[in-house]
Image (cartoon, rainbow, N blue to C red; front, side, top):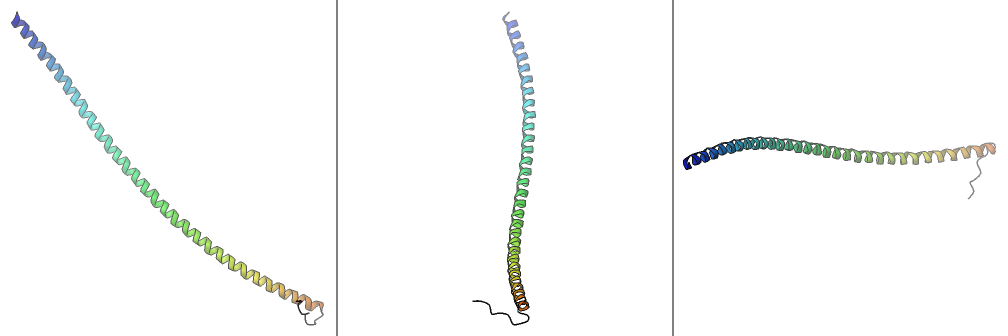
Length: 121
């Protein structure tokens, strides 16, 4: 009877070993699948990071271009303001000269062609 029990024990142990081995193979396949999935996720993350880096690079380039254009617009505005100031000054001078001429003409008309009265003062 000891031999039968020993054989039965060995058969049960071998059956358990085969079951455990099958379970280990299944776990190993699972692990391999998950490792592949993780590798794919890491590759996807790397692509996303590269895409984001490109977006950031483009945004920085656009910001630099915008800043350059903004400075150019400010310079154009400054120059236009200077031209406006000069033109305004010239118009003021011409308008003052016109007023003076008109004033002299009116005085001459009032004096019936006599020379204008000397300006007071």
